[in-house]
Image (cartoon, rainbow, N blue to C red; front, top):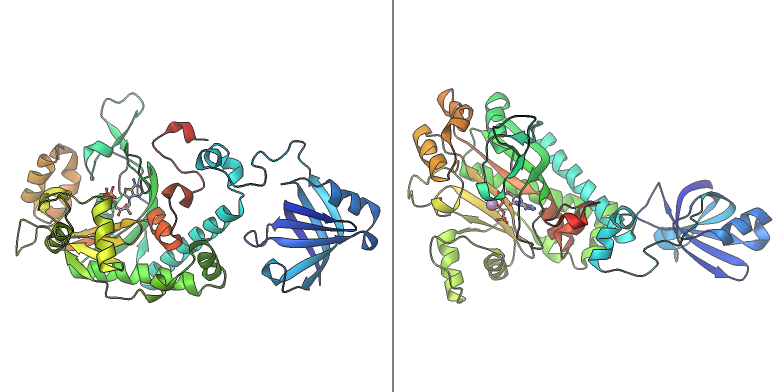
Length: 424
Ligand code: ATP
Ligand code: MN
């Protein structure tokens, strides 16, 4: 079969009268195409072109596509013609070796072409595809929330302030679309969105970005337990689809190694209350007392103990945001749950939402915000309010878990971290 491959040179090997070109093609960029050029089978220009190609040269190769079980992807191109589109004058700044993260960040615009990164981008794309597919199949409505907002919902410390024309009133980059989704779920029933959220996270950890991709969902007539069921179904659906997908199934194995724990994940996921978690942690000699927030170390110890993804539920009311509903059976705790996974920790925060206006006003104030900015939000409790629940899933953290990546920066082509030095 004659085939025309368009792409870039990953690497070239010359063996006398044969040249092997490993090509990244626009058709299957995640599998290098081996192009074989034999001197006696091609004209002189093609032979000279093949010899001339430098790393990351762009070119078009035409020839016969044949089966070869030993070549990557089980096929190779017996090249008949090579046309150079652009042969770089300078050597590829990243050379052939692997590089430390600082170098990969500085040259991010080029390192995004690296073979490992390409595989990550493909899995990321498919992950989003399958998540969206789950919502479509289950008749949720996808909506588009704003990015510029005037209401905080996750604590003032991580707000990014924006200068809004000549206005004095502070405007922020959104931390979460939740408040808007709450308004929209009373219009449409079940809604979800995928949009960036922003957190001024000064602490540099392996799982915090300043800008991340937030999948949020909100549903009317949904209680705490309905909410957990949707989360586990959605997350497990995406994992199973990715593992069974011809392309991503292989890529995940290649990047992550063993996938047994992903394969075995099934609903219902264990539910562990905050109070139970405290007992586990105290037994493990953590210096922690009831009422403290849990950090990465605590989440890691818990997921090692439980051995699978699990829901951590019923947190003390004080450590969660104002909108979380109090547990009617024990108002010291609230109807919030985080989904905790091994290797990463929290990937979802969710809750049933408070519907009592006065309770909301009290807690908005307690968190240091001005309730007058939240009038529109409070109106949602004044006009046809119903029990409702929702959650926010960090796509980047979810991908970090699926691929067992060491650092969240590698889940995104252009990650935004605390240090502006790494922006390109
Ligand atoms: P953490 O305690 O880990 O900082 P959080 O409790 O502040 O997270 P939420 O406000 O509950 O996070 O946000 C919902 C989800 O968004 C989290 O479960 C996580 O997956 C993701 N997320 C939150 N902050 C970040 C961040 N800075 N970078 C990447 N993902 C994040
Ligand atoms: Mn959270």
